[in-house]
Image: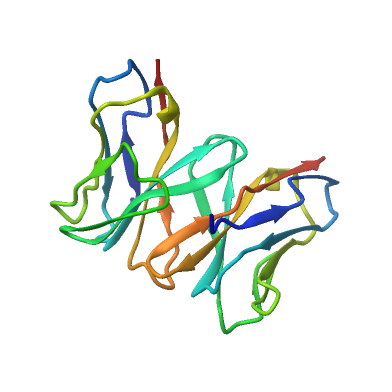
Length: 113
Length: 109
């Protein structure tokens, strides 16, 4: 089944404790992206990747890192999480950026205390 | 911010009625997409309209795009209770996507 998977689905952590949210897709998509969703703000793009080893900042990259060492994986790293990073995070992928629909993962609900 | 804005923020209709939601955006775009999200779950793609298209249909969905007014509308005809969800427009510019804040649609059986 074609899908985007994220892990973990729920995470409660404390300020400053490094964490990684994994994202994997099995559709051989080139474009992958991370979003955060906050009430009243919609979805905002954090980072995106056009292909392996090609990543770039979205609208809200501060406090986040990403890597794209393999085509299927695009982990999101929070080196020192803070409470303002409490949010619902979505990973998405598409064949290419242009003229292609994005497939979304199920989301990761992160709480930073 | 280059985010789009949906209007209305919330919409409640009876089953069988049509639902119309609007999206306005600020800059030139490559294409505009509409997505649906059931409560707290991942978004699902509904339809994509390119910047050189004016109207597109998919089943009960009709999307229009007016690039001169920087606006789009999504019409859902003959709504069903299962259409209850949040609907987001997303504009694509360069290599980035900009989502609106969403319209929450409730269809009452």
